[in-house]
Amino acid sequence: MVPTTQTRAALLAQLRCDRRDADPCDVTLSTSVPRRERQHRRALREITVLRYRGEPLYVAKVPLGDDDGRVAAEYGKLRALGKASLCRPLRRAGQGYVMSYVPAADVPDLFLGLSADSQLGLCLSVVNEVVRLARHDPDRIIWGDDDPLEVLRSCGVDPERFAGTRTLAAARRALVGPAHGDLAAWNVRFDPLTGRVAFVDWEDYCQVGLPALDVVNFLATLAVLLYPDAQTWDELFADCFERPGTYRELVRSSIRHWTALTGSGGRDTLELLPAYCAAMVHRVTREGRSADHLFFTTFGRLFPSARLAWMDELDDHITKEGDEP
Image (tube, rainbow, N blue to C red; front, top):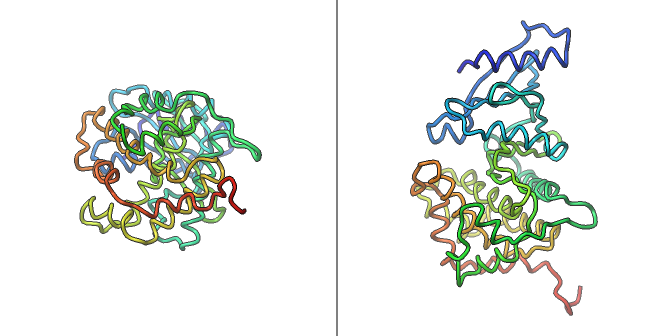
């Protein structure tokens, strides 16, 4: 793909602003569409990376066709977030914008090649970043007083559909605070040299959200990466939740880390999986697409009736009142 003239001009203008003596002959531009849009064969965004003498410096994100205003709104959200995001918005590019390049690679491109320790470290770093985004400091977390069920409704999910289930009880106890809103594994970048993670694609960021859903989103989409050879979504669910293995250990460690940082219940957190799945179905159908063939439809159907005794272990590290430490 070739970037639009407007995109190219905005990227070169940013380069000249930062490096007045930069030689345009040393510039290369590469353009693609986001991974999720390639998967669904629908190009809505154009992503262009500017490299100077081989070093990636900037990324331009520009909507294609009729814009719904989400990219322009994302620019404003990133400006408001400031240092909470490693994506620094630099200048507008038509209906899109130019941002700083975030090293080093999307999680799906490297996860299976990491050692077990590095995979776990990445997951724990993602949890750390979710908590940091939710205004964590060494002593406490400042959470909002908003009703978590109302926040869930704002995601297009009627909590009463989970009446009589642990999911509804867990949703009532969910912590409210700033949340990324679309923390799939492909919206996380990881630098193996520094061990640092960074979130991208902030279109769905909300200041009043359910951060636990970010954790659940990341872990749910991680399943697709870990078991690429699963023949059906039912088989994938069984591999992840009903059979011991790498995925279960990553989920257990990640959620226990989340509970240690936030005081949330571990089982409560994973019980939000059906709510996450329902929110994703709502998002897809709102875009005029069917969600019947997508993994979260199957996960949302199977999880409520699955007997997953190992989930009780998600809280077994918490010392209960009256117990010996």
